[in-house]
Image (cartoon, rainbow, N blue to C red):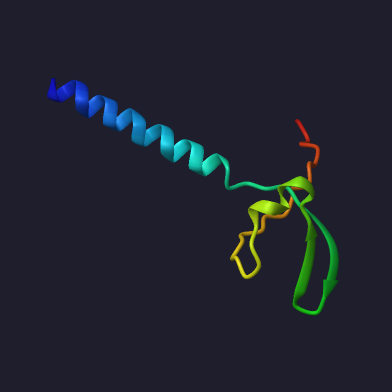
Length: 69
């Protein structure tokens, strides 16, 4: 019984952690840059962001061809 409860709790915790990590990613486009301020256009997902909220920005990687032998 204890093993079953432990297994259920671990599965629940894993499911919550995975769903939280997946909802944190947003795709936005830079529309304006003035000095140290950047303006993003996030479309319908903009309601997930609040004013003053800290965000982590990743630039898109350029897809370059890999040369073979």
